[in-house]
Amino acid sequence: MGSTEERQEYKSYFTYVVDDLKKMHEEFPDFQKHYVTLLQDNVPHYKQATGFTVVAAYKSFEPLHNLTPESIRLANILGWCVDMYLCSFIMVDDIMDSSETRFGLPCWYKKEGIGMRAITDCYLVENSPYMILKKHFSNQSCYGSLIELFRKVNFKATMGQTLDMQAVLDGKPQFDLFTRNVYQSMVRNKSGYPFFVLPTVSAMHFTGKYREEFYKNLKSVLLRLGEYLQVQNDISDCYGNPEVTGKKGNDIQEGRNTWLIVKALEDGTLTQREIIKQHYGKPSLESEEKIQVVYNSLHILDKFLQYEEETYRNICNDVLKLPDESFHNYLLNVVNAVFVRN
Image (cartoon, rainbow, N blue to C red; front, top):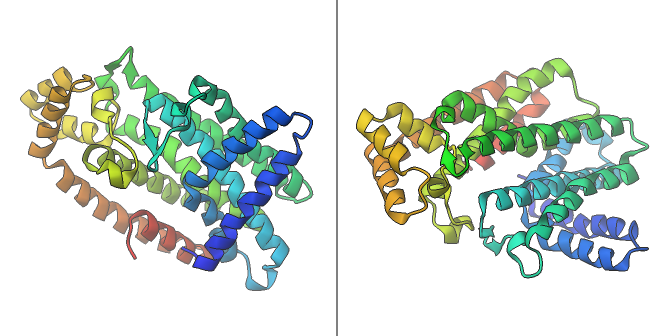
């Protein structure tokens, strides 16, 4: 999505955003130094493609004659506000998951001298977009709507994370919560809102194209994209190569609520479900291997591919039913990028 030149232009704006934030804290040089390092070492590596979709969406929604250097500059800055928020969200997720690496790099909290200081660092990154929004958008009619959107998405994503954490209590999986409905609620909130609703609706507010009735139909598409993205992540955690995914999978040993375990409990025999309840969430390689044997015997990967194909087809059909055709090309590009279809 977007040309190489457009992506390079987007990357160049990060320096300006950091400079803005740096200048706001010149009276605290020690803090300023840590803050700049925090931003530079984390934000550019965390799902940068999501922030760029703000620019792509803006250029799709806005009539060509309204595209000016100033409006495109603001769209790029708005994209980095989205990326900063997503960075803070993923940094928290790494701490919750006890992850070692992310995108092939050590997690921030794992770096020497950081540790649980990373929690306050997450707050710093999470709140940084609001300072940038105030500086660059406070004179725009969309400013209030953008602030409300960021806060709403933050609450929804946090609710999704809470549902995720409730699935494991005192280190024990809560199998009664491993249902399709609970899983959908969890992932649509923790993935759908931050990764798809936030960038798309930000662009809608910026262009003045937000309409509540239209958003209701659009939201269904965006939340299902978030659900698929998390299912894809669950599959990668179990079957992916850490050298490719940039993250070592540990969902089975930690007893996480994933698409695979929900599907296995739905489709498994009584014996297979007993094996799951005996070994899922146990921190041993032997137990992990027993769960993987159950997954393989149930052809979980084949079922994922079937789910993937059906979801792709249904989302594409629903995109083309949206009444505003200016959204079609943008959303289909997003869908193809998420499903890796070019």
